[in-house]
Length: 217
Image (tube, rainbow, N blue to C red; front, side):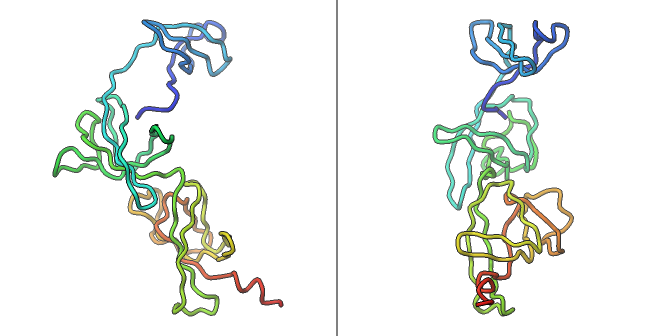
């Protein structure tokens, strides 16, 4: 999928005349582009072959709401559910994860080529809202409370460790994962030391530690 800053592999006349290095495109022109070498920062002009791109609709889910944007990608590129890419919209630049690929009115796929995809269904993962169920520290479940934490998507939660959110403090007891979370052996996670990043978390279950902080008084 398209990145926020285009980078291309070309030879650098300053530090690598015989081998390609990564260059950032500073300005595109007719036939040639102005580029900067990411290795030595040398700026020069070169011919850049542009790949064909196609525009596709992207539906983004974020904090219980959704909106539609568009993204450009090479038509022959293979994409799959669970992959993430940078999406640039007029309002913001965000990282999104593919949750579904719609090829037609009634056709959904886990993997497909961009040219066959009609709509990318995604959710924002750079900043996410995590649901937390907090049980009282007396062991009962009758007065459980619910919290919603807004955190960076790469924030790590660890079973057995404490978290603070505003005036609330709680210890993570177990972690329920989202259906599109990958790389985990169990769901939910419940062993001490088990961890997951916020973008993979469906809900945290925790024990309240807020009132215990005042027990000495």
